[in-house]
Length: 181
Image (tube, rainbow, N blue to C red; front, side, top):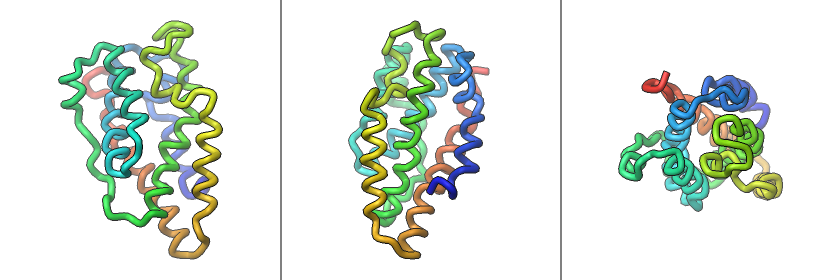
């Protein structure tokens, strides 16, 4: 999965919003817009995958802490491109995108001190994620993936799940800051 997704993964490192968080130069309006866009991806992703709404809940709390009204939060646009009737291997590998992003999220969380204040958790729960347990959660996910039986059709489904989800994510992030430039 890593090799198949490396190009799009690298492009996402240069996404203007994520890069601004990484460099510590993002303003509050742009940061809020980025989190709104992330919410619009993760909420339907977790729902269609029948996952615990961890990321949705973290984003919900962050957005409310940043002043987004709950009514406005409920009205945010949502990504709708997630396949619903995919194979279990495809669905498992689709999680590669969100589980892997948690590793980078911890570094991004540290870069928000200038915007949110040093040691303040409000507004950065999403990027903090599982905190010190993030590595353990990632390893548990990789263990699940490693137990997928080998074979050409399985490999195809696994690669497609990860690459399709990265593509949906990248496309969804387009226009993230249209109203906040």
